[in-house]
Structure formats: structure tokens, C-alpha cells
Image (tube, rainbow, N blue to C red; front, side, top):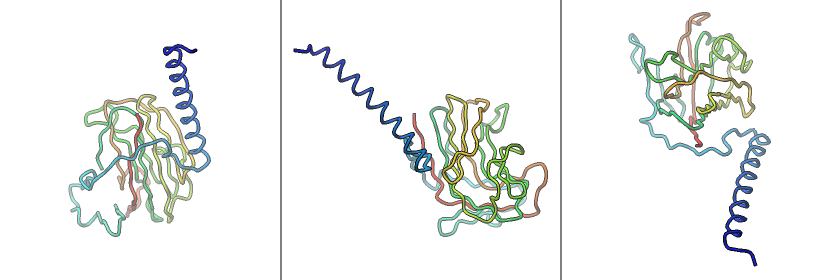
Length: 204
């Protein structure tokens, strides 16, 4: 007859084994379904979590529109764990020299951002460098950005496929931003991006 301590040990081993198996299965499901949100918990957001930033010389009414669930143009700070931004974006042809999504550091940090996704002539890029996705114009695309704070890594998924992964410089806290933010070269005279179904996910 097995002792109670032996039974508890066996049970603990079974639980640990099942947890590891489920974690592995989630990874397999994510890879097969093209769904990087598998294993994450959805964060409840309200309209107060979406903050519109205005340039000093243009009123909000002339640069932001929210109609039928589409934001044409957030702040939710975090400092640990794994966080994921998901949104469906649309960049009209002609928009160039612009950042459409960022992971921003806390105010006063040595580096303002750990990730910026720029658009130059129809190509989505990591800052002004590596191409993340070609032919981004005039189509709705699903963008997922995963930030592992502890590992100091970010991964970018487009339409469920991982397109970019890199190490980043750590900071004290972070928040996601999306919209249009003019960059330093090759700017178009008109810049626009549209976003819908923006969601945050996390796991710790």
C-alpha cells in the first residue's frame, strides 16, 4: 500500500507533467492555426484606455474619426510579464515616412521606444531597417506584437505568421501606441492609418 506522502508526490508529478503537456499543446495549436493569442488572457479595455494624442497645431476633430468600430488616425502601462497587442490595420497607398505602431517606454527613458513599425513606400519595417511585410497598402491586415518583458524580446506577426523577432533594450515600463506618427525622412504629404478590433492580451 502506497504511503500518503508518496501519493502526494505522484499527484504533484502528474500535475506538473500535465501542465507541461498543455503548454506544449498550446504552442502546437498556435503554430498550426496561425493564432499567436493562444495561451494569452484577453485584457478588458474601455474607451478610457484609448487616448488620442493631438499635434499642437491641428485639432482632434480634423485628424481623428471613430465610425462603425473603425478608428482612423491608447495607453495601458505594463512593466512585467508577456503582453500582446492585436489590431486590424489598413494603410492607404501613398502613406509613407510614418510609424503606425509602437511600444513606447516610460517618459524620461534613455530610449523613447523599444519597437516602431514604419511604413515606407508600401513596406512595413522595423524602424527604418528590416522589412517586416511587403505590399502593406490598401488591405486590411492583422497585426500582433508580442513583448516578453523578462526576456527583453519582441515578435511581430502579420496575418498570423511570425515575420520578425528581435532582442530589445529593457526599460522600467511600457505602453502600446498606434496611429500615424511622422518620421524623419521620405514623408508623404498625407498620412493615414485605420484600426479596428484593437485588443490587448497578457500572460504572467
